[in-house]
Length: 246
Image 1 (cartoon, rainbow, N blue to C red):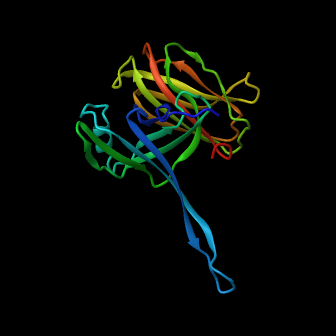
Image 2 (image 1 turned 30 degrees about the vertical axis):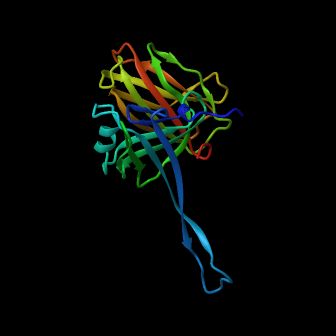
Image 3 (image 1 turned 135 degrees about the horizontal axis):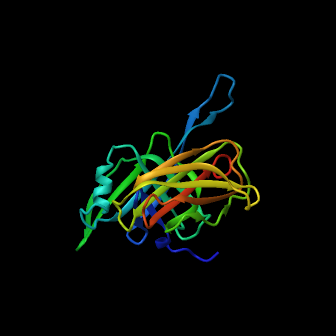
């Protein structure tokens, strides 16, 4: 496999995209180790405990504008509710995606590394950890109703899953609004006949999540049912299938 540049990555915080060109990311999985040694043990014994995931974001400070790293990290310092996704390969649908669905920023060091360069770092964490899914579409522009190309998850899941939607802009505006835009997550066993698995109904940009239940078939796609009066939307969709992408 050819080397992949770090600039092929992106960090998504609700509607905002921080490119790998100015933000470096690191995903860390942590598993607690619990002492299970008992009186019959011949040596120390341990068992796996709770697992967690965090996403570290290290980027350049570019100003206090509404979509700048400064405001987004500061506004979410200790405040749950952000949907944060790290995409190692943002332009490759079907590639791994790491999402913390109820994230807060737990770290905010600011430093002047050199002349004209100020860095601001953050660490996204959540009490319930994160999810590993697959990228269905990245920053995709939708201008009409219809179906997108499905992604093959290789196998079906029987225990549901999750879908995470980042709505980046509505009518080219990060603060844009619509009236009940409807997007659906659909799955199929044969990449021909699809059934609804989750529905997103929204009227503004931001991050959204939905649960999938029961059987989720191997081919998964995004379907646009209603633009909600908007002429265009830009969205990113990540889908997690339990016991398949976990």
